[in-house]
Amino acid sequence: MSVSNLYFAENRRPACRVLLVRHPESESNRVLHRNPHATDSELTAFKDPGVTPLGETQADRTALHLAGLFQREGVAANDPLVLSSSQARAWCMAAKFLKANRDMDDSKELRERHVDHAIYEYRRPGKGALVVDDGDGERTYPEDSEWSEFVDRVDTWRRETLQSFAAIVDTTIVVFGHSVFFSTLMCLCTTDGRWRPPSVDRLPYHFPNASITHLAYNGAQWSVLYTGAIGHLLEEERTGHHTAFY
Image 1: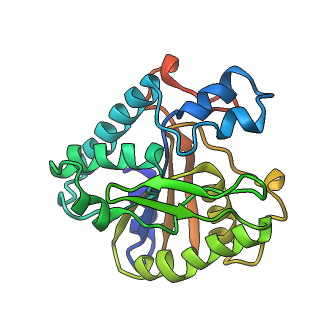
Image 2: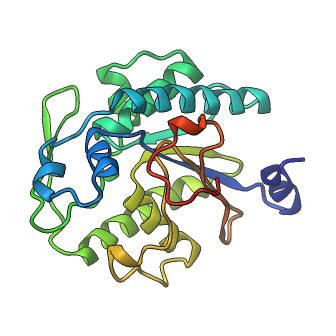
């Protein structure tokens, strides 16, 4: 019996499970991986960065891995609730997963159904607004005027969206998004909002590109089953990790 199945079996109320999937390597990630001291102008030159060729490989492998997990478990093809950031690097992987799991091609209607515009990465003061082509024209996401505003934004999404879906018994939610958003979200989930990270530098969680993090909710509390899993990627495909121990 897997760790996740054991967790479900030991709780009287079936758990909701949430898979947080970080985006694959983006163009700006590649700049940072090659030069950790890259300037803001180098990193923001891409506006809404796309994925690198390696990122495409990571996205393909992760999408097939996730679809395979659901198929092996016998989960109905339309069972997982899929939510995604509209930013190109996250939606790229979400679209690949929807194709692998449900044979759905990327389209305007698919984006409208699965994109959640509240899921976008931290825009620190001075970075400027983010402009994203969402398939039906451009959408502008404002920068966060201060760190606490970003934490408020994530906490609002946790309380109003995630908790609402998590209250549904035996539900699986797959969220495609970003590392700072996910790390902040996990801090808020596991403490029921009682601990708010005071700054981006104090975030305790770090996620490799195309990694999978598994949370479970039993109706009363959140549990973290594993974080930043990248075992589905070949060693030479792993980027954005902070440790040699996978």
